[in-house]
Length: 249
Ligand code: AMP
Image (cartoon, rainbow, N blue to C red; front, side, top):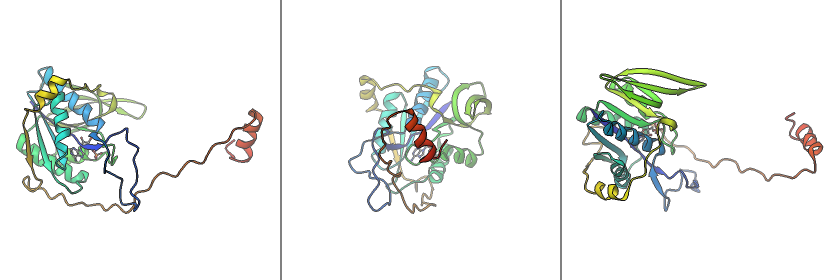
């Protein structure tokens, strides 16, 4: 079985995000980018399936500018076999990414497609669900455990207040939650080996997909600044302030 994994290049989670002065978006110049953390978990799971003999090949795909090939190399160094860069310098929104992945799935015929549950830059949590709908395949979202059977995959899902276990007939789409696994760090020898692994570059047009945006961002704002705190002399003063000023008790 072939496993296709979608990985997005996002601003690194450690970076303090700065909003552009005209409110049109966030600053991306001179900012560190890395693989979306949920997608690292997706790559790790696919590589573990390969190591367990349950997957024959792991193909990673990223949609975005040429720099996404660095993110693909990271996934190759973690153990994926080959990469596909669907190059676009324009913004590609979740519906368009889902259409691109659908077109690639038609070419590659993967038994399983793994995505992150959400990209930490747009927090959309849409691509996996839309892809499953476009493909007419079952979906197991927010997976915290995954077991491959002969013609089905059992997915344990994190839901409010507990876990739900579902069985999906393959081929299927799975999105990863935080507790599915702990992604490995690529070793130096594997980073070197990854340089020789193939990455194909195609355009959305090559795949017959129109990626023009369906949404227009009207405004991006910083969260309101927190005002400075104060020190109170004792518990009585604290209770008084909570009661009479904040009016929360
Ligand atoms: P989102 O729906 O934007 O929150 O993204 C959910 C998941 O879809 C991500 O964790 C990725 O696995 C995948 N994805 C979204 N955008 C891209 C992209 N540009 N390239 C590759 N995968 C993507």
